[in-house]
Length: 122
Image (cartoon, rainbow, N blue to C red; front, side, top):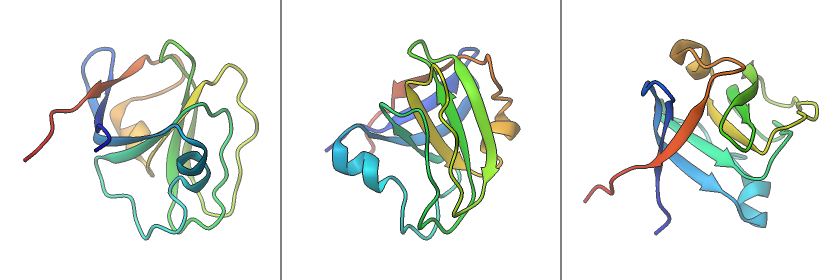
């Protein structure tokens, strides 16, 4: 079973407590396509990634692009289905979250975030 991560800011604010990692060719390609929703507190980190598309999506997402040190280089707020981002220079990963999550958590360009392995639930 693949680990699940908690996304938090450098100051310890929890942004999402159930973030999956997409780091293989197929998981990166599929992302969240065709899903009906992304529940609050969930997310998907795509690595490597410096642009995203919202084709075949059904709901808006916040997308947090981070560099290799976890510093946010760009935030897309509630990007709607059937849109695409431009190339984000310096981005090494994109973290997709339910629309409005980044803003509500205070995540903006320059914020440092980290993914911490979440304890497994039995």
